[in-house]
Length: 442
Ligand code: AMP
Ligand code: GLY
Image 1 (cartoon, protein in one colour):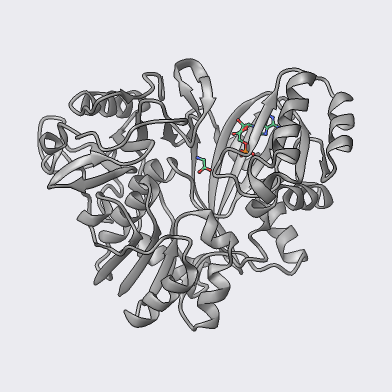
Image 2: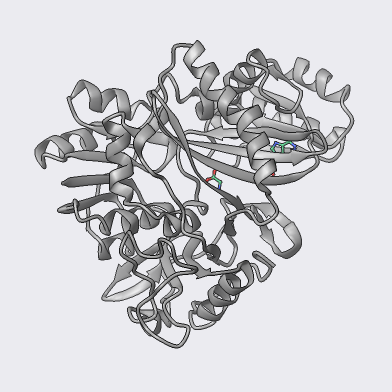
């Protein structure tokens, strides 16, 4: 099968790595990909947002299946376009993508269907938003309605700060049309976690749990980022808590989608918080998470391409989506200055030392019925994966080309083992101004 994967981050490298292990795969294209995905398939220099060129490419190359990583093409309607062109693609329709594409509509959906979420109000008028925010006790959560590359949520500690944020969002239009409308909501206290669910429109299946570390610095300090690390499974989430989340949130969400006559085909990401009143939805995303995918895919005890085919052919119900009984920890190596201003083009040292003998490369069935992961290589090696996020090849050298540069994944039978392995591996890698958190999974 010829597969086209859309996207260019660490999530896409992880998906490419999963797809590359399928015996059914004959050729993998990644658009636009990065230096890591280039090792697993052929990068195609078409942006993830250039939908018509992507469709033309898929037609011309007779792609059997297209898989989408990021949200932007989904919200822009890539599924609908491909379908019109008779091209097979795994992604929800534009109509269903409001779950991520519009926080205002997503909140209205949750409210209508009694799905637990923070109390809120939505506004397209600045004065009204401000008046409402002033009635709330800080901290106050303010969310841009539309896509804002993960930066559309601000938490105001004071009313003055809330006013400034509302001005930035609604009047200065910090995120353009995306921040003209806002959701103002109550701040929830609790522990965050995420669930990843696959759905073929008929049935849905839980793929796994993960937690990401959004703040830049240790101890959850500093600005929000796209994610500085992740862990799977979520160590503190018990079976009972998971069951409660499925019962109160996941099942009602899919029932509500059906009631609204929306067929959801693809991956649904539940961004959740466990509060004193149980689980509550912070956000929906219509795709896999980044960097959560980097700790989820290595735990899949099934062929990722087979999962996508089961989705395409609506036979998810019979698909066995088992996980390996291992923990995975991902530490993100970022460019100094990220998430604001940072330089690119620094040479990355030490990657060769980690490839390929120490890298984990299982066959899909490996690990089944075993404790832990069997690996190539000896002496504790072979429990590491490196996924590229912002890298490029320049004059034969691997250089930094983004804010988040590399994802170092450690796998182990316990969280601490996985964590130790990830940190031991990253000590061998360096580039100028490299920044990472030292407390992922601690
Ligand atoms: P979102 O994009 O909606 O997940 O928001 C990004 C981050 O903002 C979340 O991961 C939380 O850390 C935080 N957040 C969003 N909504 C709330 C809320 N109602 N209460 C507390 N924190 C929130
Ligand atoms: N890790 C958060 C996200 O993918 O949106």
